[in-house]
Length: 333
Image (cartoon, rainbow, N blue to C red; front, side, top):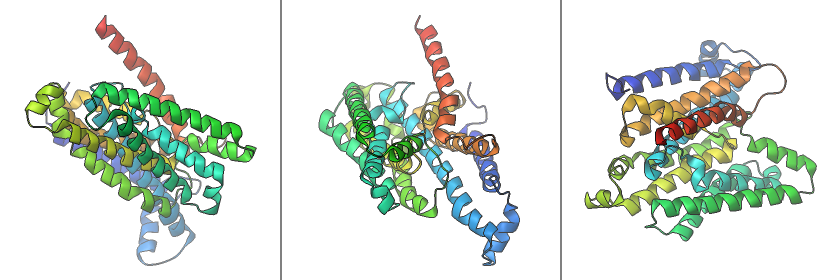
């Protein structure tokens, strides 16, 4: 199914939903706020508890939800086009796992206690390390299959190294903190986290958006794309680097938030046809909508401790993944 009015109507609808959810996110929490009145007080320079809660907690949390969701959705759409695999998602090239391992090292060494920004910085360093390892193993002109195999190797190494750090940790409280962080959450994220991660996520998203022409050409095969003048190796490197910056910096700040990069492109694909370039922007918006909605739902559930964002997205995404696998299986029979 394809939108009869073109992608512009779809983009406008997604933007409207995202703005509504963002405004709702500002007002939802332990303490209810009158967002409009609080914004007026902030604009007048009145330092009240409500304005502090809004500007120091709610606004960074909402903006991070939008940025992380859009980064995951955009990276998922780009990787599915690059690898020509509908089951591809940002974790497939090892970026998410290496970013998580970098953050675990910050926990394990105690750096996260000494310097609050050591945690996201270590996560970003882990994501960039994943790109270096990927191209050290596969090479700049590697085929898609070689990239996948190199990503599997990096994922396995990062998972093993993370498990080793957990196993050797002498402090059970540090282990608990690491495990909870790895579940993913937007709680207690401050303006400092936003200022650190946002520029890298925006740069990564900009690099991903430049890959549209290559992804369209790749639907005809790598040889045909090269014959059309597309520098596949260079564009592939930019796409992987963009994924590392966008997803790695998000993971470094929020922890692992899975399945958004898989679900968002599949929800949008029937509405834009099968041109990968048209899927990029709508997948980014859909990812932002999904993460915002999940984060609002978490704060509305008042029974027990606050759920982790990664747990909620996994509970939604895992059944979707199974349905998708079964559908693909029926198509191949």
